[in-house]
Length: 174
Image (cartoon, rainbow, N blue to C red):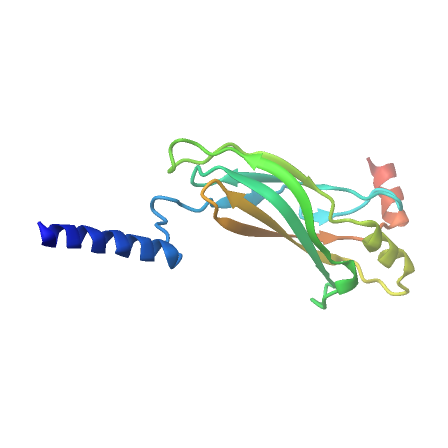
C-alpha cells in the first residue's frame, strides 16, 4: 500500500512538473491553421485621392476557432529596400473565425477588408521626383485561437502610383 501511494504521488508530481515547464499536447489543443486568399494582388487607384482597399478571404483549415486580433504592414521599394517611415504596427482588428466540430474539415471563409494604400503611401508617390512605383506591402495578420495558441499569416500586394494618362485611357476604352 505504501508503494502504491508513493507511486501515485510521484505521478502527480511528474504531471505538475510537465505542466509547469510549458509542455503542451498539440494533439489535444491544436493550433489554428489559416489560409488567406485575394483575387487582387496589384492595387491601382482610380483617382489621385483614392485609397483603395484590398479584400481577403480567410479560411480555417483544421476547424479550430480563432480571432484575428491585429495586423502590421511593412513597405519596401520594388528593389526590396525597406521603407520604415511608412510601416504600420499592430493595427487592432477583431474578426472571429468560427471553426467546425470536425477538425479535419475547413471552416467557413470570412471576408477581411484591409487598407494597405495609406495617406503616407499616396504622399510618397506624389512627392517623390522619381518613379518608385510599385511599392510592395507585406501584411502580417496576427491571430489567437480558442486553445490559447498565437499565430500569424503573411500576404503581399503591390501598390501602384495613380497615373492620370492610364486612367483616362481606361475610361475611354471602357
